[in-house]
Image 1: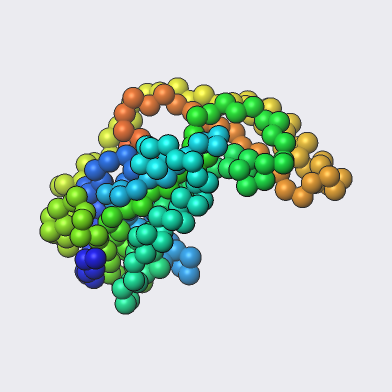
Image 2: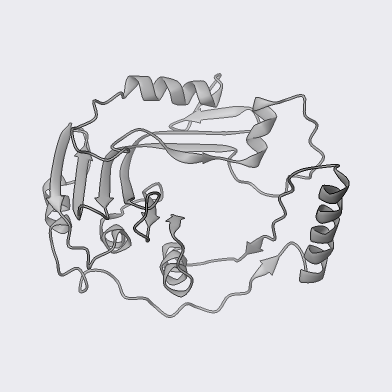
Length: 242
């Protein structure tokens, strides 16, 4: 492992660095924009070594089908790539980053009947094991670089980017978004009716929690990173992920 601690010029955000160093679709940004107990660190994860994903009972390990529970596959990869935590490094310095979708409950609790129609093609489980993790400490003003020696990235060049203070000319400016049509799966009136029904169920004691969402969908013939950059400026969130 290669571990380094660098000074962070905090006029540049983790998103500014990610804009320059990202190379592929499975590169990840976990961003905290407010300094607080739960918002101290941001992370960039690059250069995937292993990707575990599953859907409907099928598990893929680096695109190869495996007869294994995806959670077991993740545990095996974590054990195989176990790293000793470098002193002073933040909580996440290597491991797995990803998500479990709602439909993953079919694997955890198969006896629960599913009545909802599946109308998306998302993976139920998707986890990336990066070779390179960059941590940003909002309090100490430090950058923590942890990389496997077999990384395919030019680590010397990456370190040079991280210590620069003049990223503006390298980072692409916010571009004007092309026009696109947003489709939703519910009208506002339909959403309100569902909301009122959910409240009635809670008041009557039939349930204690209901999750109602309105999906917004676009056909984007451009890099989705442009949408994230626009959203983080127009409607900033304390914690965000790309």
